[in-house]
Amino acid sequence: MTEASSSPATFEELAPDPESPEGKALLRKAIGASAIGNATEWYDYGVYAATTTYLTQAFFPGDLGTIGTMLGFAISFVLRPLGGMIWGPIGDRIGRKSVLAMTILLISGATALIGVLPTHAVAGVWAPILLILLRVIQGFSTGGEYGGAATFMAEYAPDKKRGKFGSFLEFGTLAGFSAGTAIVLLFELLLTDEQMQTWGWRIPFLIALPLGLIGLYLRSQMEDTPVFQELEQDNEIKGTAFTRFKDLLTNYWRPILIMFGMVIALNVANYTLLAYQPTYLKSTIGLSDSSGSTVVLIGQLVMMAMIPFFGRWSDSTGRKPMWWGSLIGLFVLALPLYWLMGQGFTWAIVGFVILGLLYIPQLATISATFPAMFPTQVRYAGFAISYNVATAAFGGTAPLVNDAVVENTGWNLFPAIYMMGACAIGMAALVFLKETAGCSIRGTEIPSLERDLAEAGSSKK
Image (cartoon, rainbow, N blue to C red; front, side):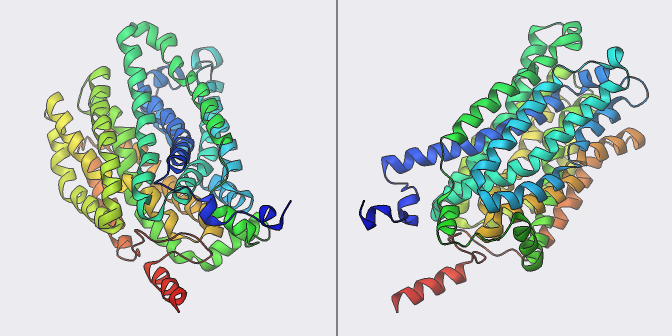
């Protein structure tokens, strides 16, 4: 073997060429491997949100009612920050691929087990306890799944097309959520109310297991990201996972705080529109189960269709203009659109679709914006910790807060006010965000246009 053949591959050799057939095929595999885990995670949320009434009857009869079911939803977020603190630094130390294989198995397995749990009538208080335990496991694994998948996709995507390719991760988000909603709706149409209440609600949860196995297979076929492999070959990945965690908190607290504020806006809107909305439409506006699910499903399908366009658009206009447009639009129009949704089924569709389109510029650019806020050696941990702490505190609790306030005060427009407050926080954080559209995210320094220009200038000398 010659010396040249034994030398490690360069970044240019590892990175996919988006213009070649081989590079296009590799990028499609990276998209699939990233998006399938996200789709599985959100499939669970979609099924859980769409089966709220059945879960309430099965696990929380009596005084708790829907509040108990919403607590079951919110409790899954309690361990998300811990999951981010553990999985993130491990992913920065041993690689993205290994952690993502473990998280998708935990998510899909815990979701499927919900489908075989005994009800309160059979197991008494143990039924809701077991449900909450599985939701905690899901939250812990999700704490590493989303940040890892976004990092994986961002580090595979070409710099000039990171918005375009990264948007497909969020396409997986809505595909999973929409699939969960659509499957529950399908069973509601095929089965009687009694059949759905006794056993029909279980089947959608069981479908998560084959989804997880497909995702595991896709991820096992991929190498780790070229950006991570480059640092590994250069011996830049040193110390333990705790070293990565300590480095993050010591040297990168500024992007952590900026991202924290932006995620508050992102996920209050996200979980209000996608997770709480079915319950809101049914219990507050008075739509039937199938009509409420139909409204959300139509909105999600429109959002899915538009995500790639907004992701591609952000590559040319930048991430910040997309976020400004979304946050200002939601802040101004949330209140009138929530009022509009209360005027009946057709108006509910119109209002929800407009809200979804206003939200899409944020959702479509997550994978392009957040990973670029951190350097490679702390990127996974920085994303996972910032994102999950903010999500646990504000996003995952949004359905519970909205439901509690609406139910106890009768103030049906509160979800709009809550969303507006979150958007105000997001705008305050967005002021300090640096534009990174088109930037390289290689290396051990925070990506920036200034760094790229400086490196380009030095290379010409």
